[in-house]
Length: 480
Image (spheres, rainbow, N blue to C red):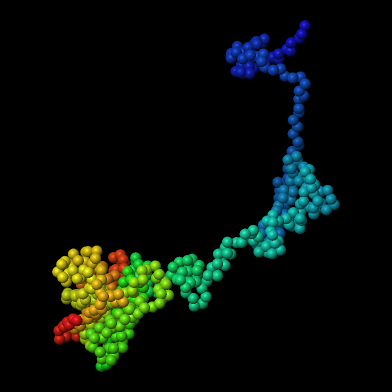
């Protein structure tokens, strides 16, 4: 007969932890099968858990003696590494961290630990001299405190590039980065910024005349030009000259055309007025000289036009307007649509426009086909019918002589200004009150008026303060 293994008595039900009754095979509370509890094997030995004795505590009064760090020559050089074995103490088994195994134990060298030899010691030990930065050149890099990089330092490259692009003494410096050299094309070799051209903004002031020219806000270059000067008539009285030219944008080299015309007209006046030529005749001759100078540009070889190769190669062209103050007279001359305005010092007196445009709008008004408001509202209003250039139909210089009987201001300007102050009254309102005494600041203010209005075109204005005795004999006007 076989024998069954006796089930051990349970003190609590494994399911609900209630004490079962003696001999129960199922829990009377939860119904747990008490016979399913495995019996404890008889061959599993009981293992005793031993706790190692605690390490003796160090006296409270005894302070830990930390190793002294060696001196360093730079703040970025790490101090010697302090290892656990460098400080007195015990490990988790209660054994001392340093167990000398050599006669030199007092110096801290050659100490042993349960896991193997551990190098310890003071500043002269090998552990204190170990470096973990893996310098490529320990001799040179350690002295500077810098790591050797696999790639060039970008900061050094940028510095070298800036030095290479730095301007030599006397060279033009970039207006954007203030450090790069400007090449022949007008661009900075360091930052690539396009530099302002010399003609983008020009100013000039003499004793009795001032002029300002600006590129405006929309054009990529200034195609206007001007010339102001003064000379003396044969009797020693002064003569003041202002010439303003506007390049025709649809033509080739308009900037060259306006510069050539202004220079030629000014030179012609400075030559003829001291000889005693009548100012009105001198103005006529000056316009003819300017026309010839512009015509000469069309005869230049093709190489001279390479900078403007994208433009259709029609003849260079420009308009011209000028004023002369000499012998108590005011002489004006023009071809095109640039204008001269008269603004009296006493603003209660009437103002006047002294020129008539060579334009489609002016022709419509002169023919009685439109009034001025209708004509200038048309998209063809500013199409010019007269200009200086080899392809002009016929040169017809206009000149007029005036003798003002009161002091005032002569405003000589291109359409880049009068587009924003078209009528004489609007122009007078835009002229600063102190323009007679401060012509250059007033000219700047008029240019600013055009820029504030949109600056769609190049803007050029010359101001000539006209002074006469209040008891003048009257005014006269002769027009040719």
